[in-house]
Every structure is written in structure tokens, then in C-alpha cells.
Length: 327
Image 1 (cartoon, rainbow, N blue to C red):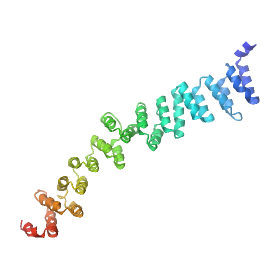
Image 2: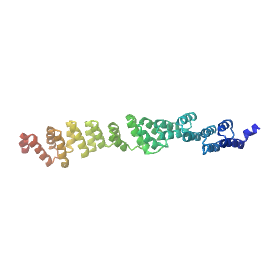
Image 3: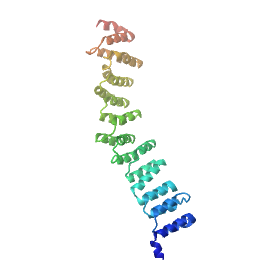
Image 4: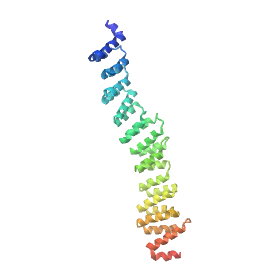
């Protein structure tokens, strides 16, 4: 008879279901001892109201090798991330690691979540991972996740955030190598973000790779690399950049570089007055007079330059004014 019972699925189902409804204390014993019952259906009943037999349902799923459902039970019903971690490590299935990663992320265990997602080789939740990792400043972890993500997620956001993460993790050589290869990153956007956050070295590398010479000149200025700023400004070739470089060089008393920049500004009558006031504010009268004097030999010199220089002689070197007027 016991052999018949062992083969009889309906009888085993009946025994366990009766215990669920009438004598819960015996359910665990039956689940352990019996092997021929409709596990998934019984587990659903055990999980539901009014029984709420979570441990029993978990054991059924485990015995039936339904690891995803077992993991859901641990996470949703039993609510034990610790046991879920142990279970994932034991069964090692990607879907289980993925579910664990998602739960860890929701519980703000970001570093642990990234490890789980990596074990799952699943980047489905990449937007949420990027946001959470950036809040926690976990850029090295995020780099590892995004390198995995870009194998499956064909989205420019992944490459863009990878460039940003390399920069924030101070892995500038890796960042430079990445942007020089095939990628879909919005390099300009990342450069602008890093510039705003005062990560000038990283921003400089990105602007060089595009190239964006106006922004590159700004980075050189911020880094105190004035000669390079002048070279970048020559390539950018616009008054706004020359003004920025000139102002920075004057403030840093790098007058040779300041003069090179100024020569591209003083030929525009609209910008001359502003440049003069910059030099005067710093008390750099000698340098200003010398600069305008040199500028007069330019084929683009204009009457405004003569007028302003005459005013400067009047203010600072009246003894030389008459000689200048007679020229």
C-alpha cells in the first residue's frame, strides 16, 4: 500500500493540501518526505491567504528545482536578502542572480547589486544602475557594469556614461583609449559635464578628441597651461576664445601669451575698450601701452587704437604724448 501511495500523485496532493488547511505543523514534514505531488500548484496555495506558509512554499520550489520561484519567495514573502544571497551563490543561475541584483538595488545595496548583475550577465536595469551608482559615487563598479552592459544594450547612454565613469574614477588613460576606439558616446556632452564639475584634465582629453578648440582653450586656461591655450585659441579663431585666454593670461601675469591673444582682439573696435579696462584694472599700464604700440604696425590697425593709445599716454606717460602725436 505504501508503494501505491508513493506512486499516487492525487493522494499525496490531498494529504499535503489537507495538512495546509487543517494542520499546518505537519506540512513541512510531508513536503520533505513525499516526492510525487504537484509542487508548483501546492506552493501557490501555501503562499496565498489565509495560509501564508512561506517557508513551506520555498522548500517546495527548491525541491522542484524552480529556482526563480524559490528566489521570489525569499525576496517577496520571507524578505531575507541574506538568505537570498546564500541561495543565489548555491544555485548560481543567471535569472536568480538577476532577481537578487534587482532586490539589492531597490534596497540601496548598490555595490552588491552590481556584483549580482555581473554574475547574471544581465544589464536590463542599466538606467537604474547608472543613477544609483552615480549617487553613491561607485564609479569603478559602474565601469565594470557598463563594460558588461555594452555587449547587449545598444544604447548611446551606456557608452556616454562609461566615458563619464572612467573620468570620475580617475582612469583617464582608459577613457582616452575608449574614446579613440569605436563607440557611440556623446563625447561633447561628457566633456561639458566634466568641465562644469571642474574635472578639467578629463574634459581636456575629450575636447582634444572631438576636437572642440574653444572648449579646449578654456581647459588649458583653467589648468594654467597658457601656451597651449594660445595654440588652441589660434585653431578656434574666434574673439570670445581670444578674450577668455587674454583675460586669464593678464590675471596670471603671463604677458607674452596675453599679448599674442590681445593682437587678435584689438583689431576689433568693439572689443578694444573692454580689453583696455582689463589691463588698467590690474595696473598693467606699461604692458598695455607696449601692446597697443605693437598693434599699430598691424595691417588691421584702426583709428580707435591711435585714439586709445593717445589717451593712455595722456594718463600714464604725458611726457611722451607729443612725440606720439607727431608720428
